[in-house]
Image (cartoon, rainbow, N blue to C red; front, side):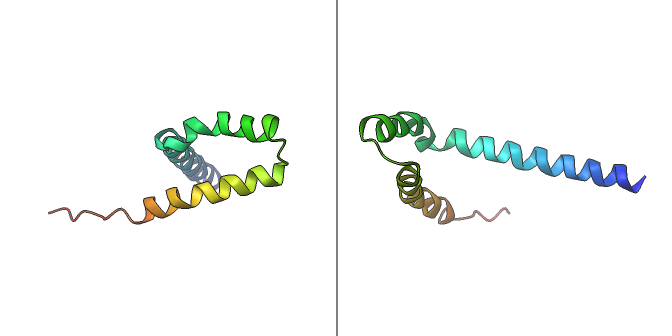
Length: 76
């Protein structure tokens, strides 16, 4: 019984984090520009995989910092 309860909790966690990841990527305005940007970097500018990863890291920092500084509202 405990094994099925653990499996159920793991399934719920995976579903929760999967949905959160999907929603974050759909709301992120950079997500829509990711495919054309990757195409341009790879095929036109002939960038390597590590260069593309570095570009994504640098362009993702402002989004991360912006999402961390959103003030939390106090429910009353």
